[in-house]
Image (tube, rainbow, N blue to C red):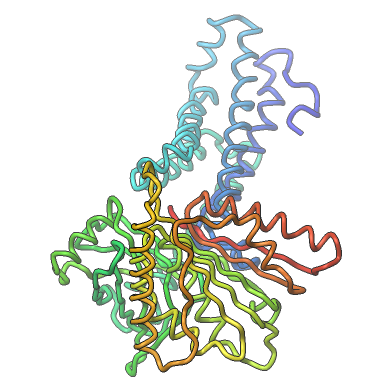
Length: 477
């Protein structure tokens, strides 16, 4: 579209701005409201489609890169036009001309370059908190510079005012409807939520949060947690690991499982180990995340839940919802849970809950398939003796979990010392007319799972199934 219309340049710069530059500049401005809309935690696209901001973020980035490309194309004609007319001297004169578009456009271009470069995945992952703070600051400065640069030429300010409205409305809704300190459902404004914590096996930490008022969320959704006494400027997303539960005083109980690694989570782990509970008070911001419609149990006969390591915390609420949803309109018949872990002791912190859900699954079929890989980065294969020790540990954990229940079915022993081949395992499990596969784990597991579902979807093209759908949850940030 940028190059379809001619001419690209005018006979002289004095006759006006290059048409190619004007076109692409307005096109770049037209994308700014869309970039902001797709980047907000609260946005109209999520409200209409149910797709969470974490899914829309990829579109936010692509549209941002398109805005950068159009901005560069917009800039080039403003350089070439004066060079053609009078060389570098003419370019310098035009650049430093009072109120010249070339001069006012340079810092705005610098901001959009900075926004794009700092969002490159390796840079973003290396210093996420630095990225998010600079990203917001650069975006605000960029928007202000755009007002200065455009001077309302060609109705350019209409796009900028639309951007301001979208951004402001997103912030207002987020503060009043999503943030616990200001939420209209909370009885105590400007107060943080109480937190209790407990260290678990396999390096996990459990946080129990009591939020004033009645909060609700869908399985798989997450909250951003801000620990004011630990890092007041940082907030971190964590998936709620259970379904909504309310106290007698109509407060809401939430459970989060955290694996301390670096930054904020490492600080939380140290506070829990030191039993400094007074330092752990939290502000909630949420819930956010994709909502699957229609309800899973009303559409799919079979659901396969796949977790890698700590990703089981995101799978648990799905499993709880599916087990407890026993309305007459449901068609769900079978639930299969595949959990891949490195060490057998990872089972212990969630074994009792898995056992309880297994005992309450009837009349549906619920099966667990646990794989203990016995590996880590750069680690040699385990010896048979080590594998026997792992099996003994698993047996003790599962036996303890069953003894705490009320009897009935029990979790079967795990596969030890091997890793599941998803492209073989998943297609073999797909037999129903409609099947949903939900996964959460490391990126490598999600890639394997995506390829496996793609293989299984050949059943749809062959007419042996109507739908095989994949939904993955974000494991890291």
